[in-house]
Length: 114
Image (cartoon, rainbow, N blue to C red):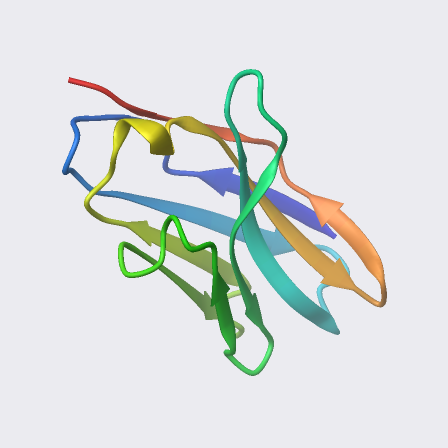
């Protein structure tokens, strides 16, 4: 499974960004996809996950501001991020779990700053 993340950038506080993750390769039976982030000097943390049947899970810090979605037909996953805060600044990574194997995409930088 190969994952390609895109959509990061610089945005002002209160703004929005949309991250996308395209999956290719052996994508059959991908169970869970998700977004994680890592800020400088901090450990990588969960942002949101979505299962193949659409069940979602969010970190408390992003709940009500971020929305994760998945298009199984297009093999893509999207993270819509609204009301961004400076503390959301991090490298964001997409992730997929297929048959108990975890795959990671390359990161995309999100910077929230005025």
